[in-house]
Amino acid sequence: MRADPQDTPDLPEQRTRTTAPVRDRYFDLLRALALFRVVLYHLMGWAWLPLVFPSMGVMFALAGNLMARSLKSRPALQVVRGRMRRLLPPLWLLGAIGVSGMLLQGWSPDDDGHPGWWWLHLTYWILPLSDPPYAEGLAGVYGVLGEGWAEQLAGPLWYIRAYLWFVLLSPFLLKALRSLPLVTMVSPIVLAACFEFGYLTLPGERFPSALTDFSTFGACWILGMAHQEGILRRLPQYVVPSVAPVIACLGLWYALTHGFKQGNDLDGIPFAQSLWSFATVMLLLHFSPSWSEWPGRLRRWSRVITLLNARAVTIYLWHNTCIVVAATLWDHLWGFDVLADQYPGLLESSWPVLVLVWLLIGGCVLAFGWAEDLAAKRRPRLWPDGAGRAGTGRTPTGRHR
Image 1 (cartoon, rainbow, N blue to C red):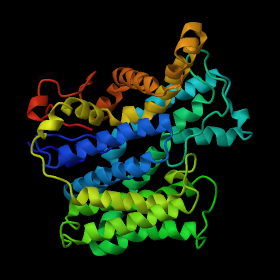
Image 2 (image 1 turned 90 degrees about the vertical axis):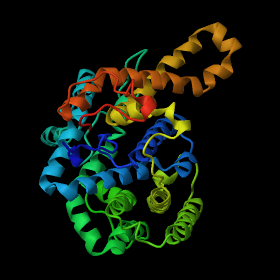
Image 3 (image 1 turned 45 degrees about the horizontal axis):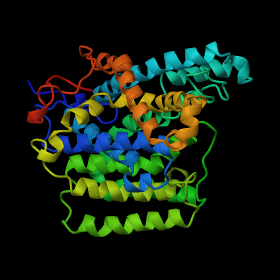
Image 4 (image 1 turned 180 degrees about the vertical axis):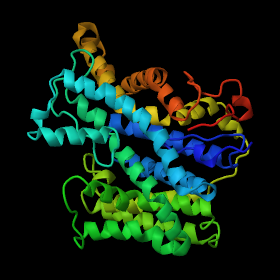
């Protein structure tokens, strides 16, 4: 029986290999690279990393591609409900642990000054249409969690919020794309320009973030849908390689002339981010190879790539917390005089911390990854890396999310 298209993923999803299109392995590679880059960037903070590989734009494009694929053969309401069902349980697990920890450290309705609103805002941990609340300035847990751990735990949730809004809007975006493809693809960038140059202002306090997300990454999501619809393939071959570099250069120029540096990278310049991500995603989709099996050089990495895709949501939700724990544990080594005196360069390096971060992420995969399986109504697995089938370039059959 053919697998349900809506059981294929993006960041918060995975794909069924036996019926997946031949380009799925290329998309899996892009998603794995995007996740690794996200972790590396959040640890190192290098401003140039989003230029080398705009992970968020890539992940939104892959999500849009898969959403369009599902909408081709399933009713829109059913697709949206299925996406939400697969996305939310891992978030609920994070919230149950994180919010409980904040409450144990004294977080309460009085901290917000409006107890009624505090309880209402907690519902965003259940349905994140806006940013879930968190306790600011917590002292941390000695020896394990550094100060401000709650902010770091909640940091990645903007992606979940943006993804949810894109899912809800996708049926309408797909109809618009089929009617007015060019206008629909560039409309988020036009919106970003209007915000940037003051032609539009963001109303209110909580929901403008959703508009900002759409203006920054909506074009990437729609590009993914356009790729699935075959719109990009119908363009003359010279169009994308000619136009995309011009858009990328415009985005880079705008970033460099508006304070681009560490601490104010593309994330702090949404208009530049929208241009750069749009152009890069356009090129990646245009040149995407057709891989029926993993190429020889990548075959050795197939199990790692499979695992990253199978546990993409868990990795993304927990990686910031893993960074906080790893940095806290590593700092304790300064208490050993021999290490502090003889190997200060090692203790100051972030590379050993990166290794520790991935070890902790592996622990989170084992401890919390089952939530993704339950969300997909699948038997829980501890380490879904496709072991035993890596040589064939395939992963286990069955529905994945």
